[in-house]
Image (tube, rainbow, N blue to C red):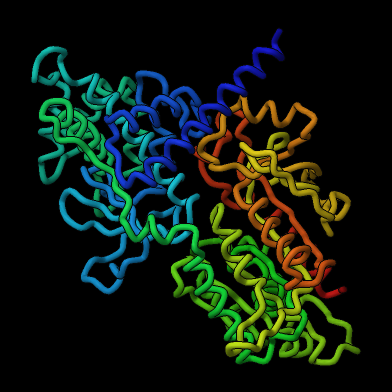
Length: 561
């Protein structure tokens, strides 16, 4: 009976996700929607039925705090004040007087056009749109909760707590007593304890805007109340250029062409190229940190070195490593294409003796020495766009084509784990795509045995590529984990990378068919455990050990190939 119930809930949740995506695609094609209109209500109802783990108590009357922090770290500051939100492509706002607003946890340029409008640039494909619309729907649900609690039924009046919050927000500065009084009224509005409200107040407070939390709650409530009383509705629009350009790989093609032109200029096109999708520090540090920081760390304790480099206060150490890397063949390419994917090239032929932590075969001629190409993380479907364009031949003139000598492609990164905890490792043997019958088995050059004996749990099996990490709930994930799919974790890019690799190697024949592929992930969260979702906070130094362990195994295979 229990299994039947769980399966039914998983099916209901899957249906809710499908409704969300069908609705989002419909709204995008239509060009606009109102959160309180029929389509907006459809999104809200689907999200409330789904009840994703990351949004906690979204379906309850009380306000959800962890979800609010998670969402506002991924949306531009001030979004809660805007009645009009416009999703656009890259339409030249960077050349205007507007300063871009970049959310702390999402690389996207946003522009506050006026008091009522925020424009958000979409350059990373549909996954970016899904991400934004899901987070906005959460905000609208929380906004309506506030409205329902403060607006007195069948009147145009609000409760006393709301008037007191409004008075506090409109003051230029609050002393401690006034602030605590305002927080007590806010706690009543949100259905939370004073202690809980004090906790989230401190999370949002900063030097430039100490009362940010109070203002966020007031604005969320204010727009919902005005919508209820005056009919002035909030509107989400999609620009004509965005609707026309989406899916055409405009930014990915621009990004890939810039890189290939540089490879051509540096005479690297025909050298063995090893692609690594990773962050912009772990490969560089693994190659050069021990040599660069020998004076500071004479005992060669790699983990100690990497933890020091990961600390925000050690800029001088990072600069020292970067300086040595650039002397030994590293070229950094800052992104100008709109993909927000920076690149590092490491020409191993230019490495001087004893500069690097790894050794190449001394008999290799310079023309045979590899090039390591590190690209920053893609976002969802953007992984297909960028790798698909990169693996195409370089067009040198109208007829001349140069095929890249791609020796291996390695994908490393963070993922949600379904058994184990933060920092543990996942080695996939196949990727399956949520909501479809698509599955991508492959031969992974990495295996669980490579990582044993390092004090971390290692899981090997299927990974599911989800449409959005913020849409997963326990019912779906338990089904994936406990069924014959043997899913060990979830992430957003694996299927998209593998689709591009397989089409390039097996269909287009633009790269060798036996290209070596490596995938390894470390756990950023366990969405099956209460309090261990992405909304519960970052990894801190827990992520240092698995990051560098995976990087070391990838580099060791490249240098020994």
